[in-house]
Length: 179
Image 1 (cartoon, one colour):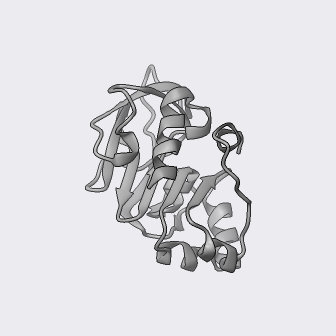
Image 2: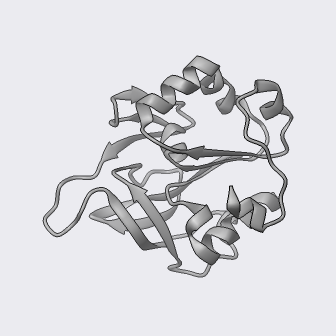
């Protein structure tokens, strides 16, 4: 992850339970589509491991979605860390799905956002979203309000791509690394 390289942080990619449990912090990136990603997590035992972690965990993009209860994408049960279902954006005239591009976030309620200016712009690429819920700590407006970030205990998640969201994304990562 180039964002961590820019911050001078050493890291490794792994699906080893021992290495993940031993890590100071875990970043759970999401790439691809929910049902395939959950199949991999289930096969490796990571879907049982991740919800039990005690160190800070940050999920991004599909990582946020997989930390929720269920996803409409592939109609798949997810890890249930956040008690909310992920749903597809509705078709609305004048809006394109997938939601791709820079949008502002607001209603911050997380220590990860303490250095991020109000209404900062971050970069999104997604067709599915977590509705605003009790775990929402930042909101974005696209077609309707949705959870730009979620937080529960030691679990943090961003629907946007921190690594390509400029200064705002870097500040989120820096704050996560300081926890």
